[in-house]
Length: 410
Image (cartoon, rainbow, N blue to C red; front, side, top):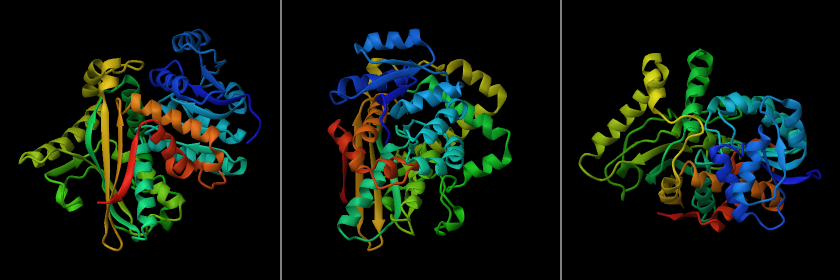
């Protein structure tokens, strides 16, 4: 990596999650870490700096100003960006970082954006050594790092490869922001007008390097309901679909492919949410699936979209401090190995999943990329995932930040 003015630049620091991420860095970055705040308004950046009580430099760069983004990328080792929807605002910055050999981390949950970034930036980033790491928040660190930890435990025990693997959100509490809704709105608008794009996004392997090279493990669906006992004998009731599975599962499959299918050639992955152990859990699971389908349909159909837009949070709005503080989540990932052994990993954190906890995940990902070069996974660079781009360095930093990450026989 070249000599740079900064270790980390937080781009989008005036936004809701951007300021939370900058706040985490202000409280937890090692002494001497060179951090700058970036965005399109010097006045708003100065206000954020004052609220944080730091003296960090400010960098003004609009998301559409490619020369300014090129200068920003060339000034730092890592850019951590919260400026979404990424499909609308993120392409130029990702390109600038790939060209400058600058590591990059974002919070995207947009399959289309990541696919385009792979196509545009992977080879460039390999040539410059840049690690372009998408989805470093609740999308998709618990999923991707959770499977990474599970694989490490199975490999250390010589217990064979991963086969049927299921993530279960066993508890979660938090709010939703207008930025998340705006991202969903933008992605649905992109898909609505392009049949080929819809087909690509619907493929379980839409983010893997080569669909033709993927092993044939049969159909893998996103909106699944499944008896808990089918996943693990101790799980009761019916597991419902997890709304973020459509992105997370593709990130995890990309990790497996980038690692030469090290998880296993028979690795199958899905994501669910616990609906409890009562006799009504099956009804709740099916209702959850119907609700997810209805919400997406409502956001696609103009009349219901108009109504939803009036009641859902607007961009810049998000859960209040009490909601963020009282939030939490626990994710358990279960697998049966090729030798028949059962293993489980757990990823557990306090704070609102999409905001407080996400700020920790993105902040620690940026610090790992900037400061932990020797601990990062071997890589020539490219468009990577949290597991393949940061790996154990992120695990270590998240544990130090209070996140529980464990794995072993179940």
